[in-house]
Length: 137
Image (cartoon, rainbow, N blue to C red; front, side, top):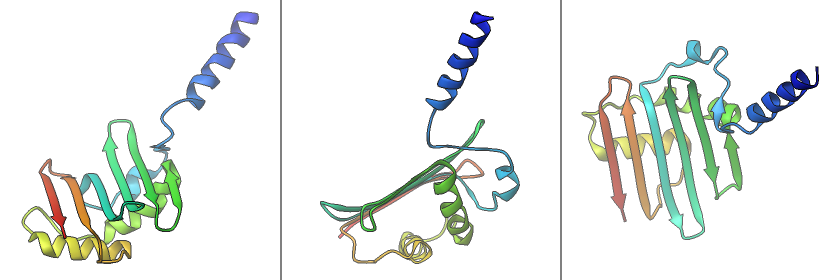
């Protein structure tokens, strides 16, 4: 009996210490209506103001996070996924879209200021095509 209790406590502890960015994959596969397997956005506005958003689909479900130093907001897991998914669904660009158009579309969809110092976006489209977008002003 003591071994069973110890195993139960250990199991709960291990689950609680898992990847906090992992999204509960319960019904999220049905709501994935965008063209990205991975989406990593990093925009620097100043040395102390940065916006970062990431999404990754993997075999276990999804991982998502947002770190918005401008609005002092940090979201991980389901909260980040719930905020990112509708934004990613608005994006219509593909690997052939000109870089300037992609940057404008991303800034608009995220509601971000176009007066950045550095823009970095790495995406892996659902078809497996990787693409990088970089612009330093």
